[in-house]
Image (cartoon, rainbow, N blue to C red; front, side, top):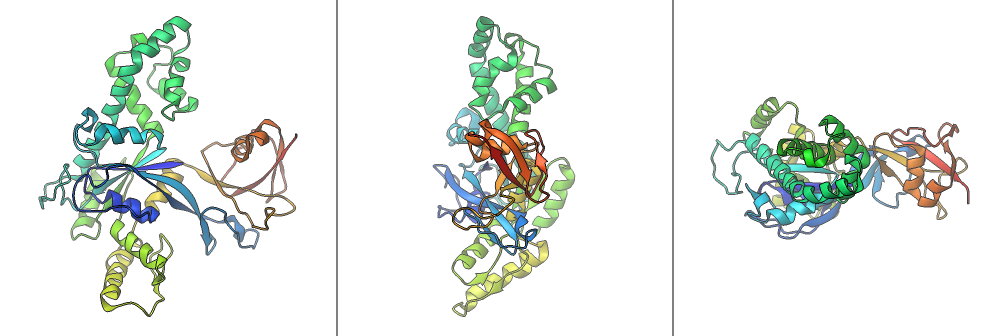
Length: 398
C-alpha cells in the first residue's frame, strides 16, 4: 500500500507528509523545497479485533491504543507540480514518474487561497482552489497520455505479430505501472476498447483510456489544507458545493505536526485523529502552552480534529475500500514469541481466503487446503470473500 502526496508547490504538502509520518524532512515557505521524493510510513486506524477476544494485542508493526489499531502504510511525497510539468517544466517529469508506484493520491491544496499555482504568496482572494485541483489532474492525465502514446506503436506491432488480444498485448506494459489485469479489463470494457486492435485506436480514445486508468488505479482525494486561516472554512464549503463528486476533507497539517511532535517529546498525551489532548509535562513554557491551547480551541474544538488522520483513513478504507484481516489460530491468538494478534493486513476489496493465504506466504497459497474463521470456528473454502476484522487460520499441506 503506497499513498502519494501531490500538489502545487508551497501548499503545505511536505508539512502534511511530515505530520503523517514524523519524518525529519525540510519544510520551507518557497517552491521546490522537495527535490528528491520523501518516503516514510504513516498509519491508518481500525477498531481492533482484540476487544472481541477481551485481550490486548501486541502489534509487530504499528501500534494499538485504547483498542484502536494503527496499521502502517507507505507514503511518498513528491515535488510540487507547476503548470505544464508534463513537458518537463519545474521538476515535473522526474516526480510524475515517482507516482507510478502509488495506489492512490492525496492532493494537498491551499484552501485559504493565499498562494497561486506557481506556489507564490499573492494574498489574492481570487486564487481558486477548484482551478488548483483541475490543473493537477490535467497534468497527471496528460503525462500518462504521453507515456502511452510513446509506447503504443511498439505494443501495437507486438500485438499484430503475435496476434494477441488487446488486453494481453497491454498487460506487460500496464503491469509495470502497477495496473492489475482486473483493473485493465474494467477500463477496456468501460471505454468499449476491449475488442478493438490498438493500431485502430484514435488519440481521443487513448486519452479516454488513460484518464480512466488513472481514475481506477490512482484515485485522488483532496486535502484542503490551512483550514486554520481565517475565511478558509467558508471557502471549503463553497468548494464542496462546486465539486460535489470529489472527496474533499479540510485539514490543518501544521497543527497535526505540532501535536505529534509534542506527544513524541512527552509534553502531551495525544492520539492521532483525536479531538483533544492532555498536557502531561510540567516542563512547558507559557509560549508553548499558548500555542497548544490555540490548536485546541481553533482547530480541534472547531473542526473535531486536525483532519490529517481522517484523510489517511478515508483514502484507504473509503476510496480504495481496503479492509483489515488478522491471521490467528483457533487454539491460540499468540505467535511463537507470545505476541497476541501481532499482525494485521490491509486487503483489497473482494479478497478471498486464498488471496489472504498468498498474502501470508506463497507456500500457504500454493498448498491451500482450507481456512477457519477463528471467531465463529466455521470452515471456509478458498473462494470465501473476507470482510473487515476477520481473523483467519489458514490450513495448508506440505
